[in-house]
Image 1 (spheres, one colour):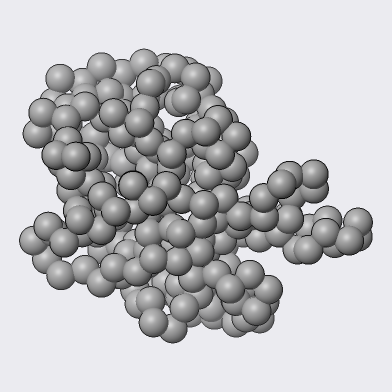
Image 2 (cartoon, rainbow, N blue to C red):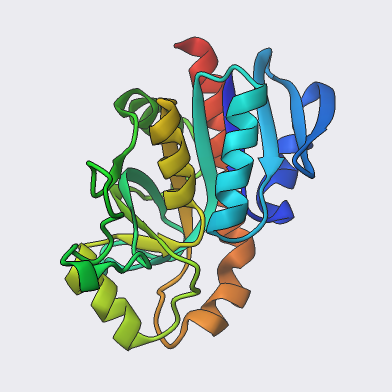
Length: 233
């Protein structure tokens, strides 16, 4: 059974409303809804915005449900000129870009005393997501790349350039790396799926408000297709 975590209600409502035979339970102040989509069981939850909310949600999910994988779905800002608004990014790996222990001679983004710099996504989930994207009724450009996570909405050229230069990131958001971190520690397969809502630069505030809805619709469409694909695997 796959699990889906979104930060905002808008990112999960469309998935939840497509489910049948639902059961909702409360853990850690969060509502987890288990149900079926085309005969395939899944669980969906809204975590709230930011790394702490995301990590709390992921651990509560893993503690209370036996899941085959965790998918973090939602929207992000693009850091790659080839990745445009409305496109979808599947994570190859995730880095927490706001971790800074450089004063102790760690590279930026490295969590002290952990034996990994980035958290690699599950290859099988990535493969299923690629197959799911191919089945979508409308054309969505699909990319794979590094997701950067921090408790910051990136909306300046200077910060965007720093993230590209320092981490070689392809998109940036506020939850995926924390979910990846928890899944990695628990040895649970994960994948971050992000539809692009803005370009993470000085235009981000305007673009986000304009394109948020379409980006969310794209991420929901891929999530539902992924549930279907997982049931066929």
